[in-house]
Length: 194
Length: 194
DNA sequence: TAAACTAGACCGTCCAGACGGTACAGTTCA
DNA sequence: TGAACTGTACCGTCTGGACGGTCTAGTTTA
Image (cartoon, rainbow over the protein chains, first blue to last red):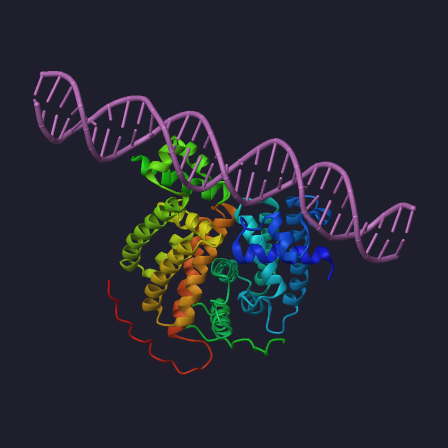
């Protein structure tokens, strides 16, 4: 792996494990097994390091968005299932950038906002109702919040599937709002990808 | 107001407005209109300042829990409505402590976990279904996440009411689930001890 | 051999916390 | 009653350490 990538990984890991304050240049360099001078060769400043991480997030989110769009059981279910902490590259980078955003870092905040906008759009396309789409987006946000606070793994895979079930009911109730309204068939749910 | 309280207010405000890093002892003292020595008279260390804020959170959450329990339209609706940013004392303290929790601050993390446990219990009592209760809790988490990242006011009061509507549908669909699954009685959940 | 990369000493700044004061409102007691 | 004393509340300065960033001297690779 390139030194640049290991530096980004190290920065990310420090943000996740110990927070923004602990992610000093010295600590990042040490964790990446590089000298401080080496770090500063690749990233001229701490700000450049942050920008590098944000670029990585944009790339990962763009790729994920394509997957989400083409998900067999629809974007919403894909989104909720993938918002639980699974230590995937997107997860790690997203939560790391969220840590940055907490410290009033405008570019980080904008990157998170961009990602959320993309997700919301796809969810809204699927469910057709704004409030419902918002609620689903918030469930995902909540899962990320959890991961950011606790370091992840608060919500198990089974919990995730139960949540997907709740989303099913939520989507069904858009079409059939009243309690005693005719029940619409729940959409066929294929088993998700690997 | 006591100097102690203004110091806690100042600390909180700095955490909210500029993040943990900006909340230095000097900055807190200056914002409270007190000298650094004065601050350290009331709080012997930065850690003691954090502990003071966490105590405040515990008190505010305990009071809010009582209100939530007695809410006319039920705990869940109360919870979602009050999770949108309204700049209330609980909101401010909760999000401030969440900022602290991001920096791997165990007592802050525990305080947030305590609050969430209390809320989840009340919601579960009302809706009777674990996954549904979890989803409602996460919607609230998502709203706080939003507030923590953006500084609040992303979600309007009308949005909040729309979300309450979604929660209505969610709760209704527990009693009358989609498809033809057998309806299981919601487990009777006794109110817990103090 | 030139460019890409690494190393680590060094500098100025900022921060948490320690410390030695000041002011003043009681309380004690001669 | 008034001088001595005590406790609370606050102030301003100082220091040691950590941090971001610079600089220069070296090493590897193409």
